[in-house]
Each structure stands twice: as structure tokens, then as C-alpha cells.
Image (cartoon, rainbow, N blue to C red; front, side, top):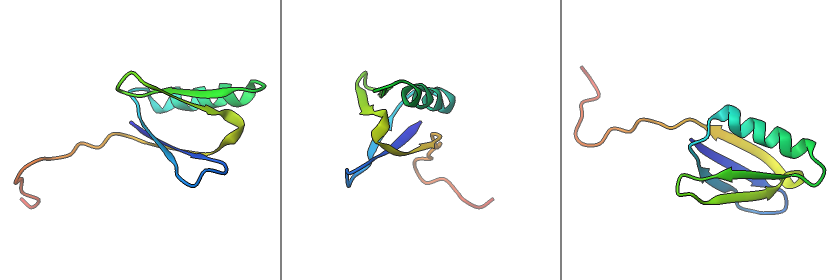
Length: 77
């Protein structure tokens, strides 16, 4: 799953490719916003972490993985 994070006062968004579900990501953001001085921590697929101060998150866009076809498949049947 791909998560795009818009951070306040930063012109580019962060893109995280994570194995976490949409519900887990949403729960992590909710908990980070509820805590005083909370931080949003997301683990990416390569064992890295992205840490963002929760009060600086402008938006979170969560998109499911797409199945991509490779090769010369036919579109029309």
C-alpha cells in the first residue's frame, strides 16, 4: 500500500510504500494526533521508518496496491 503524506511548510510530499493496512495507518495517525507532542511512525517495506511530527501532517492519502500486468496482454476479449 502506498501512503502519501503532506507535511506543512514542506513543498514535496513524502511517499511511503508500506505493508500496513489502511486501518493500521489511520489508527497510527489518530494515536499520534491524540498524544501531546506525538509523532507518526510508518514502517516501509524495506525495513525503514518514516517519522513525522503529528502536528505537522497536512494530509494523508492512502491508496491500495494495484495489480499491474506485464507483457503483451490483450485488453479486449
